[in-house]
Length: 126
Image (cartoon, rainbow, N blue to C red):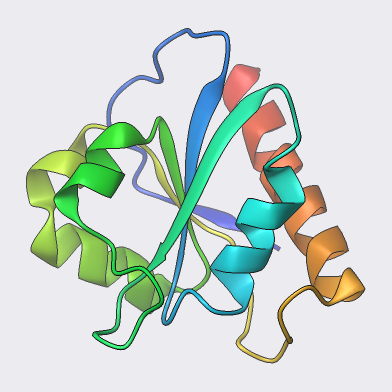
């Protein structure tokens, strides 16, 4: 379901892993991911979008803050690498392959995101 897009750098050890979720407009997928993980004591979470009309537009600071960046589609990873090469080379950028066909808060989207993210994080620890 997901694939790692060139994991760069080592993930620092910390009490709370900092996760950034990125989609196009930060209105459905990445915002739902942030909400799905915001109460999990293992993580600090933020979300942003790549498009000018995003609710919150991703910046170099967002990417630098994160231990791991999760994108919904390859085009989001490509955007981050093109615009923030230093920041993306220092941390994993993982493509979850979540299509833009869900509404914000959709229970199916929440389940998909939780399963995919936790599987990716488990594979990083092994």
